Image (cartoon, rainbow, N blue to C red; front, side, top):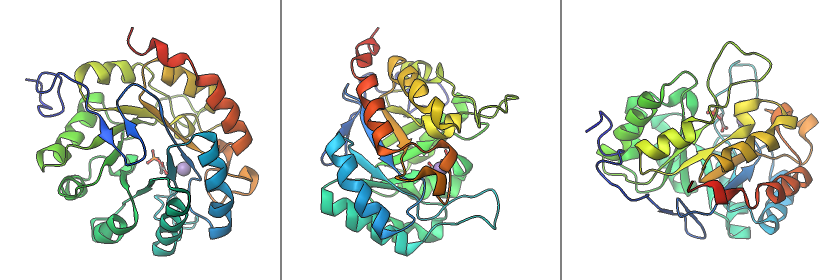
Amino acid sequence: MPPFQLASREYKAEDTIIDLGTAAVGSGSTLIIAGPCAVESREIMIELAPVLKNMGVHVLRGGAFKPRTSPYSFQGLGEEGLKILNEVGRAVNLPVVTELMDVRDGELVYRYTDIIQVGSRNMQNFTLLREVGKMNKPVLLKRGLSASIEEWLLAAEYILVEGNQKVILCERGIRTFERYTRNTLDVAAVPAVKQLSHLPVIVDPSHATGRRELVAPAARAAVAAGADGLMIEVHPDPQNALSDGCQSITPQELAKLLQSVKGLEKYKFS
Ligand code: PEP
Ligand code: MN
């Protein structure tokens, strides 16, 4: 047995499929999660959600508690943001995902979201991992900025060992010497983790590249490498976004991206 026992293929040979209500992840088709980095206003979410829904997006994203590098940057709307995301998701019948940053907000975030995101910076917050492990909602576990594949799978293990089997892994780029891109997308981690683990693996090409012109090519690489889904930051007016505007694409650009990934799924099983 590898150190990450419950997450391993040795423990469970068949792919884990996670039911998200109106969609599923891990079953062969590509799950699409899209939405702004942060919930900025009700107006933006009301405008964006039906457009994304009509495009075939399966899950609406939006941060209410934002892990920002600077304490002076926009920190998210907190509970107000959770309410907006929940209301808008319900209105268009899309499940929603948002980040839980602090165990003290566990019950609050649980109430409003369908999928609980554990961010890159919290990948080794073991108290938080155990807490979401006790919840009965799917958890989207992002890879730590400097985490090895083994550390990432051991972080998943903390959730699994508490009883929650619904873990979705998300590769979002790692820190390397390269500064042109915000992070370095570890494409090979996708097939590597698929071989090591039965858990679904999705890719976030937005945080992995940090540059909107690289989001679509990175998304295509991810799907061709066998990713079970994509999480993409979309904003109606990226230049004026309150966070991560440089890596956000417009809904029109997302439509083109989604067209271009079609058919690449056929490489998944080879
Ligand atoms: C996010 O997805 O909103 C986010 C903050 O990403 P990460 O934790 O990967 O930096
Ligand atoms: Mn972001």
